[in-house]
Image 1: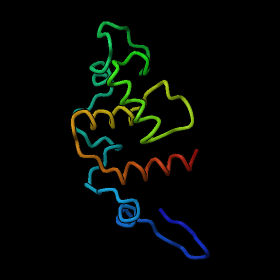
Image 2: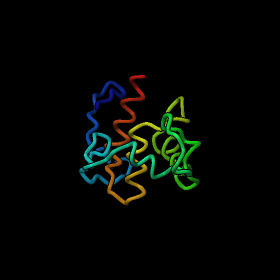
Image 3: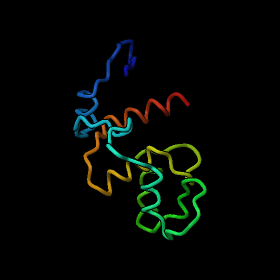
Length: 121
C-alpha cells in the first residue's frame, strides 16, 4: 500500500503500519483462510440460539446472545461496512471463530485488507 502526502511518495509496509497504529504483527493471515478445517456453516450452527432452526442465510438474529454481541462487535466496530449488517460474511465468521477460540489474529493484515476493500467500493 502506498500514499502520496505533500508531494512525497510513502510506502506503507506492515512494519510501518504496526509501528504507527501500535498493533502486533503475528504473521497470521486470518482473512485468506489459513485456519485449517474452518467451515463457516458448521461454525455458524454452533452459534445458533436454537439448534433445530432451519438455516436460510447467515443471519445475526438467529444467534445466541453472546454470539450476537460478538457479531455486532465484528461487523460494526472491528471491520465496519456500509451496508447489510444483518448477514454475516465469511470474514466476520472467521474473526468470531478466532476470538472465541483464542486464535492469534494478524490485526495489521486484517485492517489493511479491510481498508483496501473499503477503498475499492
